[in-house]
Length: 108
Image (tube, rainbow, N blue to C red; front, top):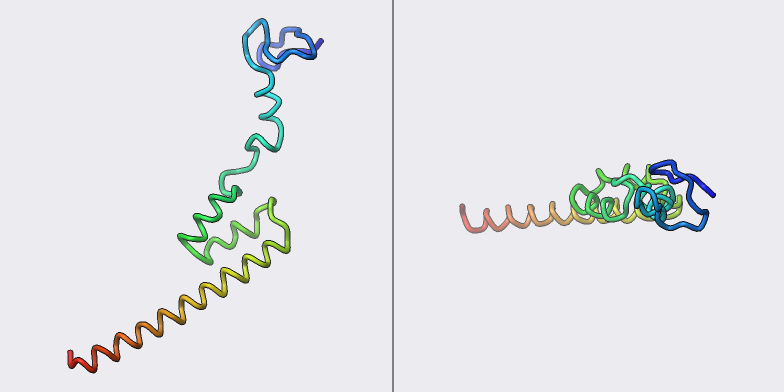
């Protein structure tokens, strides 16, 4: 016999649902486990991906302070994000220079 975590009445060890209060006990067990969503919202992978896509390298602390990622993956993604940011910056400067050149050639 064990106690129901919701109403504290005695129930069978194999019980899935409490006969006194009607609560399902499997949900209570899952909430206590790591799989149920014990992770904070900003440590979940979709939140990290959206942050990286929206704010770029400013999202690197979300990667580095995330306990779910290994050190190898943190370093890998940091390098990828920094290289991608540098490529975008160099490309933007090149486009801006090309735009100024075309403006000067058109006489505006």
